[in-house]
Amino acid sequence: MAITFSAAQNQRIRELDCESNLGECIFETESEREDVFRKVVNDLVDKNRSDLLSFARMPDTSGMHQLQCTLANRLAVSGFMQVHTPTMMSVASLEKMGIGDDHPLRRQIFSLDQNRCLRPMLAPNLYAVMKRMARAVPGRFGIFEIGKCFRKESKGAHHIEEFTMLNLVDVRPSDGPEARLKELSGLLSRDLGLPIEIAQEGSDVYGTTLDLEVNGVELASAAYGPHPLDKAFHVDFPWAGIGMGLERVLMVQAGSSNIHRHAASLVYQYGTRIDI
Image (cartoon, rainbow, N blue to C red; front, top):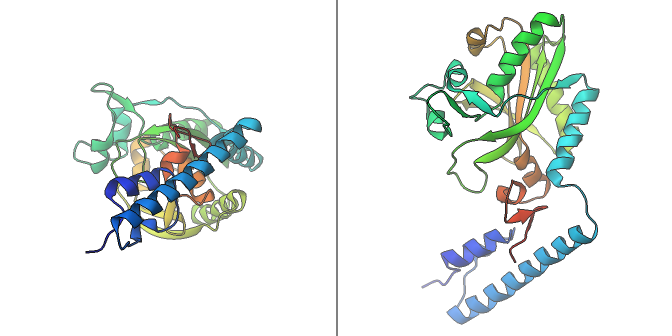
């Protein structure tokens, strides 16, 4: 019978963010397995401790803060206004997005009471801001927001319940919304230093989206209008929008497979485990 690492051992190795395929190792004896496990864990703990000491001796802002600043500065230079909207959202706003009681996403909502919830996405709020600003601002303009969103998640290493989104919307783009999306995707790819590819995918909310992926990992989804959802928000002009998960960006930039390392945490800081 093949001897492999136990479930608990594999979990410990994943927690320490080992990127090799150690879970596939086969050993001749349990003693050999235990010796290898001890060495692997000791090496990973030493690396985590060394990384943490380096951060402590040469302090810097977190990767998340640096990423937000990079994106915010780039978008401001590119003609986008940064906006801030409430973290609490009305259930009625979600229903305008087609997220009713029978929608799959509704089960992931953190409800505060019958009428309010923690926002699971930025889009409903940006729809409201976009509509009001379009009345006052003639021609093309852009807005973006970087903020926390919340969903009940149970899908493993690439999903978290509290996450940071960047949503940007280019209103009345001069070169057409679809062309503008591809231009914005290229801009993000260059600034993030990632080889982003675009793939058309189905969406529970938008029907069809253009997903921005790196090595098969979805970083963002893009959509454009006119769109069937526009009517509920009284939007009657073309737009192009992208929603990006920033923890996933940090995970891919770091070559990691564990998004929890890059999320708000009491266990990880600077992408490094601190309870070692």
